[in-house]
Image (cartoon, rainbow, N blue to C red; front, side, top):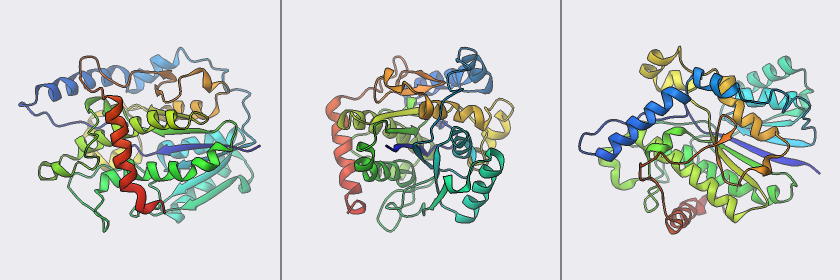
Length: 331
């Protein structure tokens, strides 16, 4: 029996730095509390501290020869590291990438560095600009843009694509005895409460803040993961925060932050570690389905006193609204 795993890489840095607004006391509190937490935990030193408690032999003898792993954003950064490491464990790798030439270059790099048979590394080129062709990289656009379908660009890339891919693969995943869906979200979601009524934040486009929208998208991913785990308990769903990692997308999308923080950022390998571990660890079911992970541990989905919790009926309403938006692309 072939086991299927999905690793959805739709994060840029693993955080979105929200602009401070003096009139919004709670927003300021969340941002300050989050950044303080980030400096302690999300940096390279934060990873090294957490890694000192890892079991170095936990994945040593793990083989994934009967596993197929589909990885979005697979040609660079965290996604590329996941491809390499899981290929070393014997998994058949399915690379979802927008650019076929860049994907082929990454594929050859994986084959060269791991020595795996080239038949085990398969490319699936998909176009980011089309919601029904699943997203394969993170996005943080700082101006309000919609596509020909009226879908806001950040939402299309970070939320809708993840939803469409996962929902499309549910029938196949149900047939696998150890199916897992791992969504690379972001600790930036900690500063946002789910907007269940307006997933695309259409009422806010006149005061558009790309970093706020990105963080909201990351919150949406975590809620989707939680709700999927309840709807499809036979599949293991989880989301994770990679920390602040040094990837090409970070340098391109956040040059100011990158230049100030580059000596503190995690390596792509450190950022990918928990996603790889979640894909390969044998007894993943010891954790609660739908959990949010950071550095191989289940962590809270909320900052203390930040008032970001949502009621169950609000989460269900969000999923219903999301299903309505996605319906035309799932036919």
